[in-house]
Image 1 (cartoon, rainbow, N blue to C red):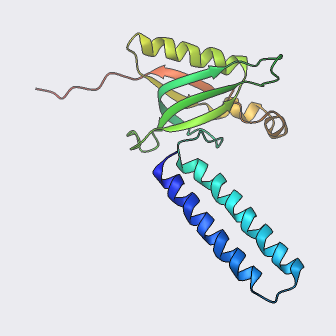
Image 2 (cartoon, rainbow, N blue to C red):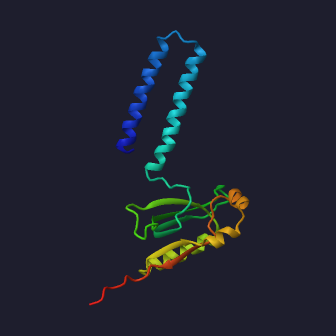
Image 3 (cartoon, one colour):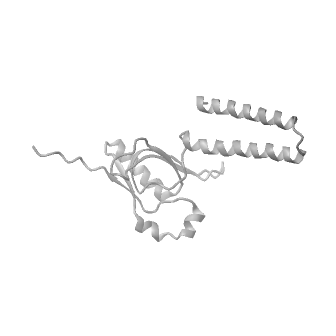
Length: 171
């Protein structure tokens, strides 16, 4: 457990103790007391869900349109365990044509097409060729929005290309 989560946990326990003391010695109706405790518990859960985004857990938000691939992990579906499978990738956004300061982890829904593309990109990276990922909007539009909502975030227009060699200045 990181120090931030430990300190937040201690702070939440302290605030819960203060709330409990205030409720024990107050003359509020018992339904209002139960409601306040329930609201406090909901806020604890919401803050924990929010902290997941800052602690390096993979996000399920949409991938950037152009990114530098750092690494990926593919978990295939397993019918015996009942898992649907996921593709975890670590990328840096290239929106400004420069890498972002820190890479971000993304979780994609598993599909065989994306699996093959990511595996090929990882193989190229092992051969020393850095990979840029691009999402082709034309291929994305072919998928209906209803199908994407039903299936989750899938990227039929995802393409990986070799990072071009840098242009050398003239002498």
